[in-house]
Length: 131
Image (cartoon, rainbow, N blue to C red; front, side, top):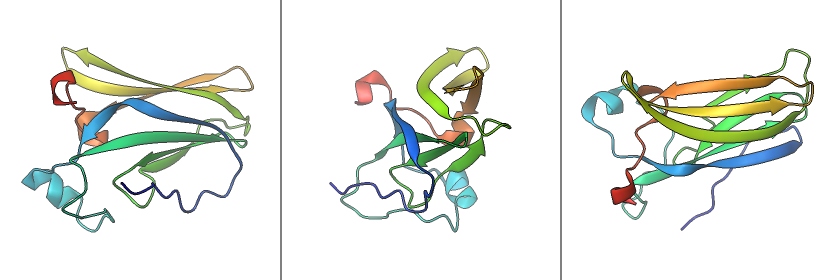
């Protein structure tokens, strides 16, 4: 297996947390159309799953990466005052409106930011049986 490359992150990282679950990487036709032009590793030996990794920096930015992409999924400034990210925590919930993934971000100024992602935004998680 090959190591993930996090090219392009310039600020000092103070916290890093991987999601405790894996995501499907097999695309159906509609997902494939949406992701045209996206740089992904396409190799027959690559696994059918990906891992999510979140990085927090000293200026209050959080960057989320997938091990299947060479670029981050997104970068978000969680603190208007550029307060340091102190901790990150992943979770997932199943609700009547469908499953979603959460990322909690705590900041040095005392604020906590909750980010919520649907399967359409991040991807579908593997079930316990699929692990």
